[in-house]
Length: 122
Image (cartoon, rainbow, N blue to C red; front, side, top):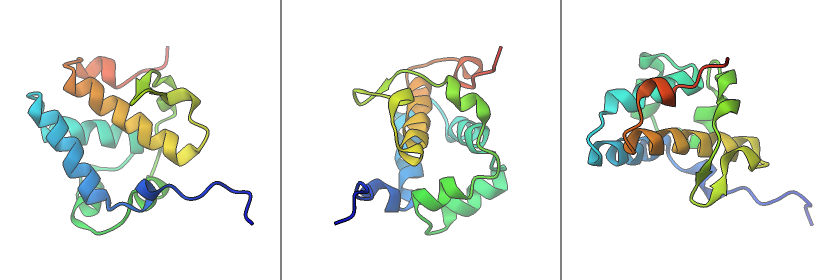
């Protein structure tokens, strides 16, 4: 028996579907897909063209994060709860990145200013 935890099913979900859900969440609250793209690019280091490639492709969420060009070191400043889980305490690095993205999109949907969402180290 493998002592490792089983792979979470969200890791294998198609990124395009997750992206669509994030955009829908933001747009329902009066925000835009452009703002969602800005957050994703800030967090992962993707260019707009690189992000579009993933949105149009059939790759999974794990590949999307694994291939991110330059994951933002300021992501460690993302704190708080998403679905009752404290983002900064998530032990699995991939799941933490997924939760960080979800937290940023939640803040966008809650009406936070982009300058606050895109954290800057002091």
